[in-house]
Each structure stands twice: as C-alpha cells, then as structure tokens.
Length: 519
Image 1 (cartoon, rainbow, N blue to C red):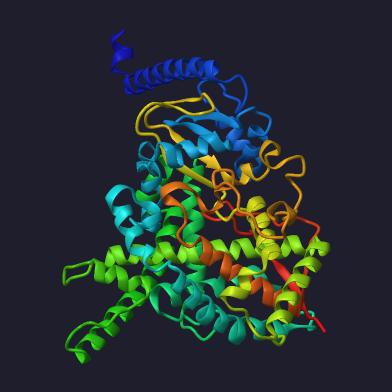
Image 2 (image 1 turned 180 degrees about the vertical axis):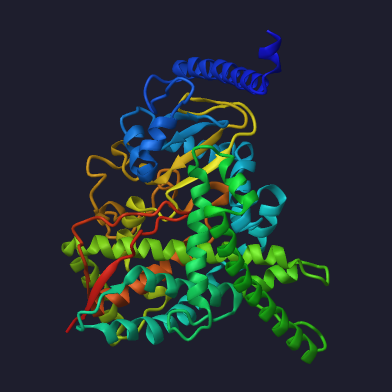
C-alpha cells in the first residue's frame, strides 16, 4: 500500500479520476434536464455532449445546424459540449424578438464573445456592452442621417464607381482575363468606408495606395482566425497557444499588428490634420463630419485614447467592407444562375434611366436608386439566403424561458441562426430555397420590408444596424451600373462557391469571373 501511495503517478491519476467522476455526474444531470426539454435536435452523447457531431460537421457548420433545426417545430435546440459550452441555437422568430428586443437587457454580448474577439476588435461598437456600447452608438448615429446618406451616394460611391470600378471592368472586358470579383468589391467597399468614416482615401481599388494590399490580407486573416476560436474542441486551447505564441495564435498576433499599424496611421493622420486646421482657425469652430472626428470630439480630454479610437476604426472597417462586399458577391453569383431575374433588373434600371434622361455611363442619385424596387428586392433575397453575418450570439444573464418553451440557464449562450432562418419553410414557404425577388414586391410593384425578427440580417431591436440604408444604397449603386453595362460570366457558376467560416460569409476562393461589355 505504501508503495502505491509513494508512486509519482498516484495523485495525478486520482485527480484525473475525480475530475472524470464529477464531469460525468454533471453531464448525466445535464442530459436528464435536456431530455425533458427536447427529444430532438442536436444528438447528445454521454459525457461528450454534441462534441462528436460537432467535430464531424464543423467544416460545414452552417448547413449542418440548418439541417438539425429545420425539422423541429420551433427550430430551436440545446447545444452542449465539454468546456462549459452550454446554450441554445435557434431559428425561431419569436425567440429572436425575445432576446433582441423584449428582454434585451438580459442578453448582452457577454464575456465569452467579448474575450474571444477582444484581440481583434477590442472594445469597439461590435464588441462592447452597456454604457460603452451606448456611447459609441449615440456618437455614430449622428453620421447615419439622411443628409449623410445622400452625400455618401452622390459623392464617394459615385466617384469610386465612375473613376475606379467601371474603368477596371472596361479594361478587362473581352480579354478573357479572369478577375476575382469578390476581391474587387472588397477593395471598393474598403475605400468607401474609409472616406465616409475617416475622411481618408486609401486608394485600394485603384492600386495607388501604399501598403493597403498587405492590410487587406492581414485583416481577412485576423477576422478568420478570430472566428476560428469559436470552433476549438477545447475552449482553452487558443489561450494556451496564445500564451506560447504558436500556430494560429502566432499568425493572428502578426496579422493584428499589421491591422493596428494601418489603423494607427489613419488616426495619426486625422489628428495632425485637425491640429493644423485648428491652429489656422483661432475660434476652433471647424466642424468635421467624418465618423472618426466625431469620436475624437466626444473625448473631452486633451489626450485622446488612441487604443479606443483604433477599436472604432477596425470595427467600422469590418462593418463597411466585409458586409456589403459579401452581399454583392453572392448577388452576382445568383444572377449568373438566374438570367430571367437579371433581365427584369436591367429593364427596371433602363426604365429609371430613360425617365430621368441620363446617358449610359452616368451614375444614379439618391432618389433614382429609391425607385429601383425590384433591384432592392433582389438584394434582400440575396441577403436572406446568404446573410453577411450568418450567426450571432448573446449571453443569458439570468434564467429565462424562451417563447418556444425552451428553458435557458444563467451563463448559457443563445445563438440566432440568420442563415438557417432564410431556409425555413415555416417562415418563407415551400419555395424558401429559391431565389425569388418577387416575394419582396407588393401588388403595386413597390418594395415591402419584412419583419426584422424574421429577417434579422441587419440585426433588430436596440442594436439594429445603423448603416442598413447606406448598405442598400451602396449595393444598388454598384449593381445598377454594372448589370446595365456588363455581362458578368461567373466561372463554374453551376457550383455554389464554398464559404469561409469567418466573422462574415465570404467566399473561400473568391468569385472568379470574366467580364464582357454590353452593346
């Protein structure tokens, strides 16, 4: 007996056995409670919970979870795996309304999400709660009024389309050269969000900028690696890799360093410009309309928190670059497979152009874009099937019962599955998998918006996206000008592009196309 006790392996083995017994007890207890709530949904294994199914399907997480939720009456299921990963995944509109609006205060972002994304997004508007989030939203809301939208469309977008986007497409037209349209759209969106939000033109689409290509690559890698933290088998593994600066965490640190350097350059340039302008103007009443300047003025101290301003810059680049470019990439792929819809869009654009007496090659203004109802419906239909942010997660502060009857415990997560919601027959009908813009058009031929809790592409409730209308105007501006002047021939259009599991729904290998000018 003494020999056994003195063995160097005795206490470690006893400790492991104790941990196993405790874990088994809590797992059985959890399984018992789970079975009382639902007999279907994610398959739960003893001790491992949903981990085996998760490992088999995490490379196709969106489609797998959609398949699981679809046959359930309330499209809601418990998701559980080791590492204190307990929660609910739902595609049920009443549940979405419950935690995005009805009980908004009980469902913040939560510490788990905030910590996973902190290295990349810091405490920016998309990765903050409570007063910090409210302050940023209030400051940003000044930029998203109707006058700013009109100026955005008339100035920045029109200039980028006419002087950069269309010349690139014309140059390659008929040459049989293959372009990555997703990359072009991302560069376009990046230039525009920088002009609008920071009064800074990186010249990324034109190729005249310095270091922007490196930044774009680093930004994409940082977003993808940050999102990958949610997919770890053992939740603590990424922290261990970060501690020792190895593997994906080493690459993430290097990418974030490049992203931070670029954001710091934008901030420093803006601060220096403001300082020079104020020195020339003794009354210091110069008004700056860009978003970054509003945040600088919101800081009443003389020494600005550059780390916080950096978080602001990165968050709005993510919002302005990745979302609209993702939506448009999927839009052009869908059009390539639905020529009848493309014909209807071209007819609508041509009708608007004829009515206002514009020449081919001219861009459209705010009111003209508002008249393109069918195009608006086609873009909404794209976002329904391929939402730029396919899933979003909140944390539960106190025990609650969802409208589906599902009990949720304190510290559990709740994920609303926007990608799955767009594929639910109970929400959109038997043709839910079809690309049909007509579902967004009323009997008078006008666009009709849907309930945001059935269509939470731009979120809903107090955190609804401030840039929703701006995103539509930018997408409509690009789509209208491109489809009337060019045929976009998608390479291998019959095969759906593989998506990336990143913070936004990007195409993994881009969107290779050939461009041909229309006569």
